[in-house]
Length: 243
Image (cartoon, rainbow, N blue to C red; front, top):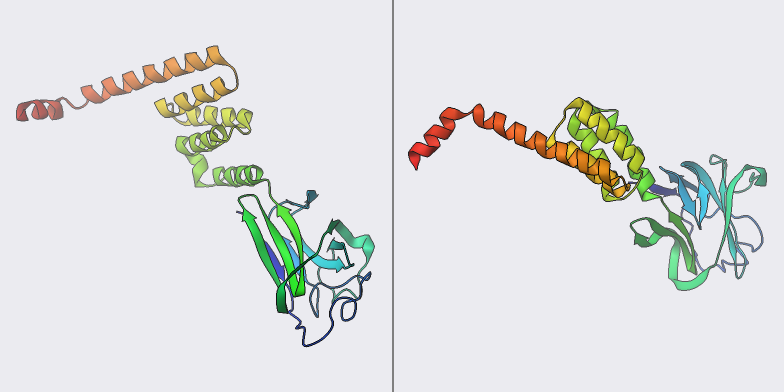
């Protein structure tokens, strides 16, 4: 659900000695060519375990032989790193470069992709420089669910019930789940939302209250079943006649 977008210009090796020559060590480098290399996160993330808010950042690096510093600048509209100002840093992280297969053209790739993280890796010449970007998936989904409930999903009992069930399935924000389930019941009391509420209460350790709500759910189901039968006598009679 989270997009990570790296926008950059792609210099070639072109027979040059890159590290320590074309790209000096110990000096801030634009991590690409021409105008700012930029990185955009559509949600809040963590980079190498450090928090960074959603947004677009100028991506710079401080290369060294055994350790690189990856710099995320609040200024994303400059030309290269020529006007880079440390005061505009949003975040700095330290990472380890390592030898890798040769890339003639500078390339960014996403390696080791997992449900909640990926390695954003700069690859050029025979070097790879990875930094891990992680996302709190549950927090991102919860934010999305809240937005959905502000739209069509918020006008039915089912929308709130589904939102509460997601929290329950993930054992996450159960107080919020309970509020959503109460809203679902207020919109339309049904066996489904009563039963979900009973399970939420059980997980929260409220056993007695859970049992009462579950009993109410079964009573509701019985009443609805009786009403259904009474409203369809002709259909039942026809069915019996066929047998």
